[in-house]
Length: 186
Image 1 (spheres, rainbow, N blue to C red):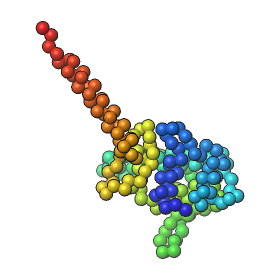
Image 2: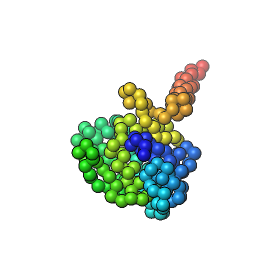
Image 3: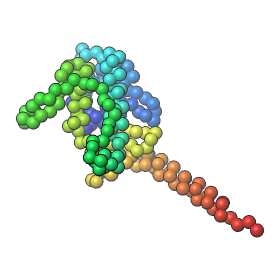
Image 4: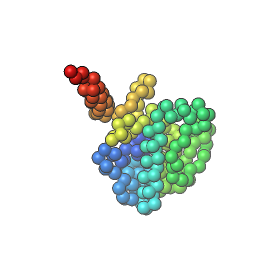
């Protein structure tokens, strides 16, 4: 099974926003994806309800990862937790791990248990390192490995460049309009 942070990132990235491509487009695709990561057994089958739960979990996580630090700080100033979109109900138990500390474990096996493992991985993941790309057309989840956790884009070369180019062009259009309105007529 992948590390919690990588598992959450990979799960969110099963839907490519830019290409509108979904790795989890059928219950069979969901079962296969979970099996390949050791989250479901070889005989486990997914239902349409499981697929709906997976999509809701994935998009809820994408929305939660898209919360920016300013929103989180505002919530902290108001002394209340930042509100996240509701996530699907998945059966989890609080158990004691080998070290004696509490941990979340799935209450079921099969596909529902695999999805519950992903939900439990959220708690163990390096949440402050997980982000979604700030480029609206991308929204790809990535692990921010920068020292000060300041990355905004999944790729500076692609998404960062797109965003900065758009901002530059917008500034240029604005300055041309201002120059055109300041011309004196004789």
